[in-house]
Length: 51
Image (cartoon, rainbow, N blue to C red; front, side):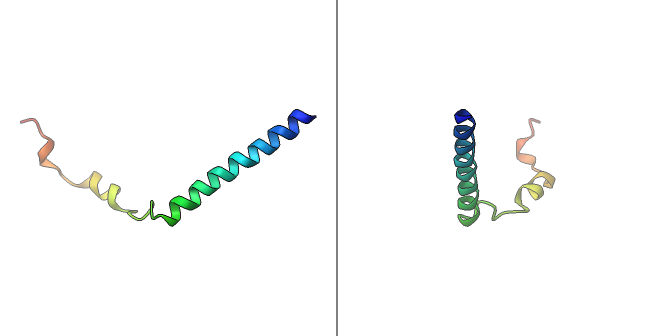
């Protein structure tokens, strides 16, 4: 029974750490460029051709 309590406490601490990291990433504008990668995938880039 004590192992179950330890596992629950550890899982709550890990979940809190992930939640804190997610909140930090939102407030530090990690998700600021929402369309950049999608548009770069569609752009024709001639500099990478090996002709």
